[in-house]
Amino acid sequence: MSDSSTRPTALDIKDLVVRLGKKPDADKIIDGISLQVREGETLCVVGESGSGKSVTSLTVMGLLQKGALVPSSGSIRLAGEDILGASDRRLRQLRATKMAMVFQEPMTALNPVVPVGRQIDEVLRAHTGLDARTRQQRILAMMEQVRLPDVARIFKSYPHQLSGGQRQRIMIAMALVLEPKLLIADEPTTALDVTTQKQILSLIRDLQKDHGTAVLFITHDMGVVAEIANRVVVMRRGRIVETGALDTILRTPTMEYTRNLLASVPSLVPRNPRPASTEPVVLETNGLGKVYRERGFFGTAREVAAAQDVTLTLRKGRTLGIVGESGSGKSTVARCIVRLIDPTSGEVRLRGSEISSLSRPMLRPHRKHIQIVFQDPYRSLNPRVTVGETIAEGPINYGVPHAEALARAGELLELVDLPADAISRYPHQFSGGQRQRIAIARALALDPDVLVADEAVSALDVSVQAQVLELLDEIQTRLGIALLFITHDLRVAAQICDDVVVMQHGLVVEQGPAHEILTRPQQAYTKQLLDAAPGRGWDFANFRPVDATAVASATS
Image (tube, rainbow, N blue to C red; front, side, top):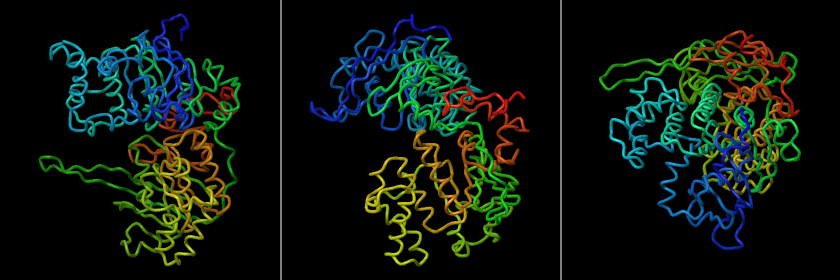
């Protein structure tokens, strides 16, 4: 990429301070940061949760909650214009014409009852004098630019009728339809699988080249940073710790915090394989399938095979990963195994017992042997129940006395490295990583033989993710639990899995030992997944490019 240092500055932040409230002595959320983004440049802002990344972006957009977070000093200039001193009316104009933002979750940013084409049209109607026909032509051209298929159909579609990747493309089209000087992207790829992620990153790069847009990219994923950044700003607790060109930050980071952040990033190079196990099989599926029957508006029925003929085996003390894109059937298989949904065909054998067709009362004795940890612990923990009571609930339901169950809860909290006083606190009093530890403690309360982790670390920043993965490994070593690990992140799979099952469109396309599948894949789809993994060319922990022989090439 050409040198951007001579280009005009699109965004200039100087000595910005944002406080928690209006009082002069209120706590600083942003503490005197300065950064610049030039036209045609991508500046990535990285850091753990709570570092101030998103607050910075919302301050630039003028979207801070009134009275709660207050810019108290410093300046923000967009193409030379003062943002902090702008009126609400001027900010609304600027948000469409000079700067735009793409959020992490497009489903919450889009209106669910308005077709997506009309939502983009609202931007043009508010800020241009174009007639309806010209507006529609521009929207369709923009939708084609963001590589949406069948744009005439999608124009009339509602958000729920589109995939996650398509919804994110709509958000990008909406953001860029008036060709703003600055695009702020706040974790826009976090919830997407690797292939969709790659497409979105490539799209932003190409649009940037075509329009000369300055991009402020907020992320906790260093793999994404390696793919898209020109320069990197590292933030911690509201301050800038380090800033520099991408290559400099990745190869020669000077600050310990940056080095620790990079060391936490999982590599696509698989961990050394553990010896083959002779332990007993605790979980197996044979020909497992799940078909959903949908009825259309006119009474026509159609069948959707979410999973077909899935056969897998998991031994005590081993970790089996199921990987694939969104919609591949990974979570469907996990939910069938745990019997949160009923399989349509095939067998699920838990500790030798067939459980796929058992009634709910007959299933109850078996449930304690298999537990699940979900992606979002906040939604899976009752906010009105203390952590201790949450963990104790399962054993109590199986006849354990209340005092004994609470004592066990205390032991489990210690096992997952949480303080003793956590037992009397509530979920909202903990960070995301701590809540996930609580969810793991709850899952362990019944001494299960199998633990299912369904995208259990995908919403966590890299350092917390590394801690939770280490915790799972430690628990497995200590307790001999078998782990079924569902993930779209191949780098995570490489670090934790003994064996890997690759799924596509509900089918198993490849399975075997993790180090073989991830270094010598046989199927084109697996090669495609590996090639799409962001940052696949970097060994982050050792501050160097990956040895070319260590990771499979999709073209090999």
